[in-house]
Length: 125
Image (cartoon, rainbow, N blue to C red):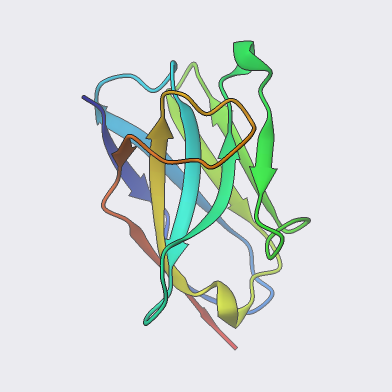
């Protein structure tokens, strides 16, 4: 069992940068692909980014809406995954969720076996 805790969400202005972090409060994520999803008010949760474990190729994947602006990275020594978000837009406002997937290796959908509780990111225009 892996319990994930996100942090770093806050109110920022359009054009600002923000880095989200996700670490397990229990368990170890080194054997999991890690991903970020988000859910805006009145919308379904959507995929943002994912990173496979390094020894399975370390592949990353991004939603088209964040390519070139967001970067997912993982520090296995710290058991932490990050989402660096640059050039933030009002439409990036959402609750951001961290997820761990035992099987994702860079292709196909990232389903998520474990999820965090989310952290709120609000971008004012």
